[in-house]
Length: 317
Image (cartoon, rainbow, N blue to C red; front, side):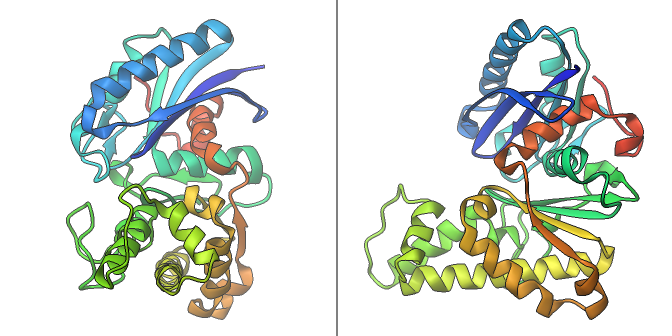
């Protein structure tokens, strides 16, 4: 059975796995991205991990990479992702490809996660799919007529950088009021700490979004207001994309969605009220089946699939 290695590059961590064509994950590893150390540091760790996997699994036929956009997948370059500022212009796929004698292909990370969910779970049931991930940032991917739609410069599905609050906080992309600046895990943590400090409550600099939801579960009023507002922003942002694309299936994934069921339920309950009836009645909403491994599986699926499954645009290095 064919196997491939999938690499999921995130702003916080990098995950790597060996995946069979039936969707079975044979091995995984992950480590912090350490953006402040630069891309060469992370790439050296990636190459070392992949070398170990290649020795352990000699049937590996290629390496797929999901990396934050925007990117130039034909040249194998990361361009200027907001959450990887030290990586701008970095030839990631070429750097990894030079270390191995197998095909190396790259997609936008949200597209890879989308394709992983679709290829291994939903491809026999749905033709039109929207996938949205909520984690360090907010990203999305689109399946149209059973093929992944990348758009120009692999930029389709950038729902996180749609403006939902014109005078809102500044996003990492430089714009003001982006969905990512209001509803990502990073944003939730930042807004919560700001509001805690504003009323004189102690703030631990090591707190993250998991601590926020722990306070939310304890009925802390500040935490509850932050989560409530973020779920509303996310539902509003989703509604705009759904009404533009009219998908049959919405898949919600990413660490915040998977790790915080209460947040998922709030978004699930709010979303229909922002949709036209014909969009709401048609739409099925699912939580990502492969959890935080969707990116790894999707990156591997770039290798395991046929070119036409992703619009005939698999780009090899």
